[in-house]
Length: 496
Ligand code: SF4
Image 1 (cartoon, protein in one colour):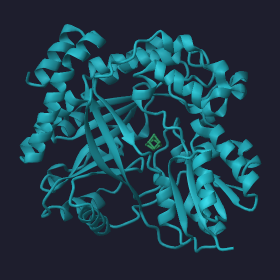
Image 2 (image 1 turned 120 degrees about the vertical axis):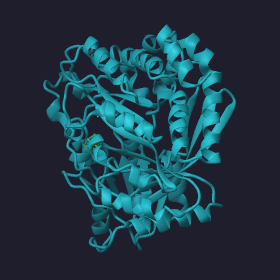
Image 3 (image 1 turned 90 degrees about the vertical axis):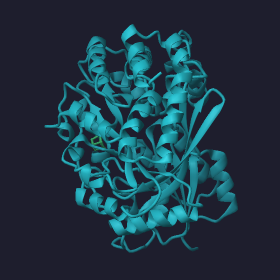
């Protein structure tokens, strides 16, 4: 039988603020439905006492659940490969296995969908025992997984699969890409943003102790897979094939800017091209520190939003050393670039008050938006969990990586949702007041962008952000109960 691969991802997308923190009752019902085996850890009273964020308030969400790992794998194998989009379920898997004859099934496993993944492997074993099962990704680092699959990939997936599938492991690499859509909603009004997700690098050169990426790839990271010219041709070609519509180019690798020369060359290639090519990418503050923004302002390619891992003020991470963060963020604002900052809470020895103080400091940075993440438990980062609790072994693996769930023994946060979820809920509300809604900050940033790129599109976007910000102002004011200063800041920022 010829090799044919079916590639799936087991990922329960409960990572958006909209589900986890904006609507506690909805979150409770998702938990009960997804993890019926974990009732002991899901106490309804924790979620029922909170009032949901108003439905008419500004919300964003992804549509479709793109499987970027799957497309990266597919683009780098000669073996015919089918990718199941979104979360893999037993129904989707069975449907696909009945349709075509496969020799291999590959799973990209994310910890919060571990039980579903095991159920899927059992289904393959029962109905198609001749199929070889392979697992990889952050959720595949638990030793128990060996009982359910034939191979576990601990590191880079492409060379591992090429070897199993009798392909040349040294063959040149291709990028991965997949279109996706993000919907922003205010009441019944929706704006859909088209996005093209691209992977042009694997791994990360940094070694933040709480993060699994660097450890999963054993400190390795790849260089850019394609040249600036090839990237330019790829983007232009995609635009032509899609009716010349504007779309956001999102880089899926964790540190998109490593080699500045590569980026300068790419920006230069877009200098004589008409249109708008916004970029959304994660990178580090140190990679931005010496970037020459003047050099890239004549290009139709532009940084639209940059995600920066601020993570902590007490722990110094290499990626943020010697960077004046407020100055850097002001510089990005000046050039009309929105910023999304991530921050880690609940590190060992942090009291609730310590966490509140750190988050207050985080909220004083002039970022456009924020994401708070509680420190998660993983065998890859077990060295930072000073004292492993006996209970850890009894917590379902799915819950090791859940927002608002305390999975490792902590001196000041009880194991479970009990302390951490209400605290995170409180802090998200605090941030929404202190940062102000995203659209308010986008209006400000876009106003700055207009000084550099005076185009109809920029003006239109600015108008939309202003209209939305005005519309949600009374909702924000009534629900979050902001201070007089916060209200004044809101009014001033959107030119009421
Ligand atoms: S920079 Fe980001 S991806 Fe890299 S190790 Fe740190 S947190 Fe992980």
